[in-house]
Length: 163
Image 1 (cartoon, rainbow, N blue to C red):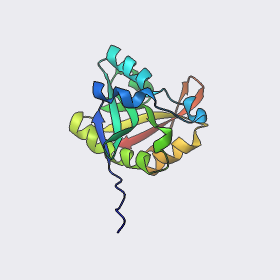
Image 2: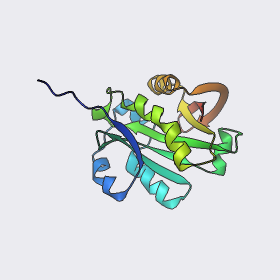
Image 3: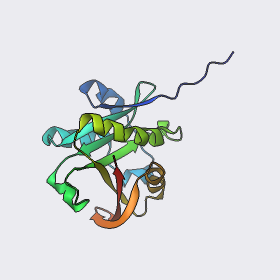
Image 4: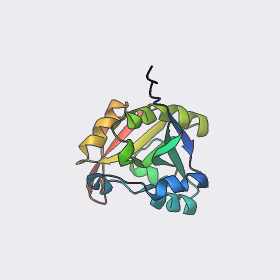
C-alpha cells in the first residue's frame, strides 16, 4: 500500500536554527526582481524591532518566508491604524507548485490574530507586472481597493485582507 504524501503547512516565527535552510534558498530569476531573499530580510529585522520574520514550514521543513511589519511606514499602504504590512513574501523554487503559498496565506489571518492582537487588516504591495503573485493573493482573499504606491521597480497594487 502506498503511503499518502503529507502536505502540512504551518507558520512560525524565524529562529536562528532556521538559518541553514535559507542559506541555499533559491527563487526563479523572474521572481528575484520582485522580492528579497530571506536572509537579507532577516538582517533588516535584526535592525528593526517592528519587523517580524516568519517561516513557512512544509511538513516541518522551511519552504518559504515573509515579514510582518508594524510601523508608521505602513500609512503609505493603508489609513487603518490597526493594519500590519506583509512584505518579502516568497516560497523557495523547490517548494513551488505544491499549494504551499495558498495554504500559508489561508493560515495568515489566524497567525496574525494570535500573535498581533488588535490588528484588523493585513496589507501588502505587489508589483503590477507580477501577475502570478497577484493571482495567489487574490485567490487567498486579498482585495484591490484602488490604492497604488511606487516601488523600486515601478507601480505596485496595494491589496487588503481583513481579519
